[in-house]
Image (cartoon, helix red, strand yellow):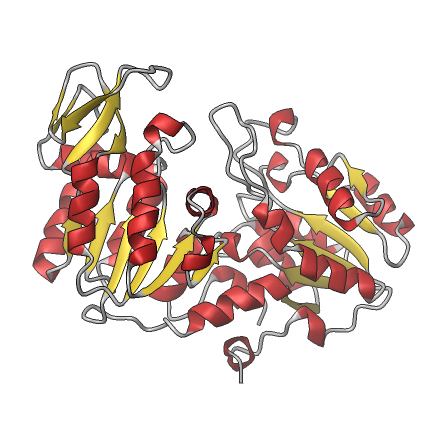
Length: 400
């Protein structure tokens, strides 16, 4: 019996779809560069098997997703229209796009759909009720469908309306093929505990999100390696000088508390010992500095070679490693060597390797090491929440 079957969650291939209106929640939240340009569209490819299955079974398919953090309902830099066009190219078929994600216009577009046709709705986050998990918004979305399918594992730790409330208003609901594959692969790691050799590498620039991940990790990880902006916060919490970079007192206090908790639990927190710095992200000249001795006015933008040596030596005893987040501003070649170097070190390790999140997957892809990892998930935070909660996420709970 599969893990989802033990939870009484069905998959799309167990549901009647013929001529039904199928609402497919996908994850088109692709990694972007500093100009907002999409760097990798792998998540689009990952949802294709589920889309093809629905179309092959003559469903009327409605696709919805979020993308980025739009500033308002008409933030055109985050429209899903280009993705609809790309999907049409991948599938070699016409696809309809609607400029909103709900309302009378969307309902009419759904009504006009014929079996085997696809409609892509506009970015769900153009409506603030998506993030608020509005019941009223979820009810409006539910008017468009007979079947709900979640194929967005990477977003299923979120309590957004389309993830947790919408499926409650649809009698027939289930998981997509990609969603099921990720859950079943991760199920074998459920109930990890300290002492099991579980190590985590956490990087990236979203400090608020990452710091929320680290505290729960203290319950299951034996070592936690930090890179990127989150590492800078923890270095600052230890009193290191970072070239004048400052952090909010509240965040510093959180980092200090985590360091104390880690010490009390005998969980190793491994921080960079050197870093690549520059006057700005546009600078072509870089300077290698010791962590804690960064020149005033310089920005820390990558980890250095000594940090990579330290990380490699600290991997001894690892049985399972999870990696989420880059070690620096990997989008620019001069600040990508820490991330690429770590990918090579991890790929050589004799332990189970799991990576999560769009940025991490792109780093591994750029290093040419995708095949060296046991699993590259669409989710970073979602994987950690899944492991911490014994295989449960809000998005899974909503499918039961």
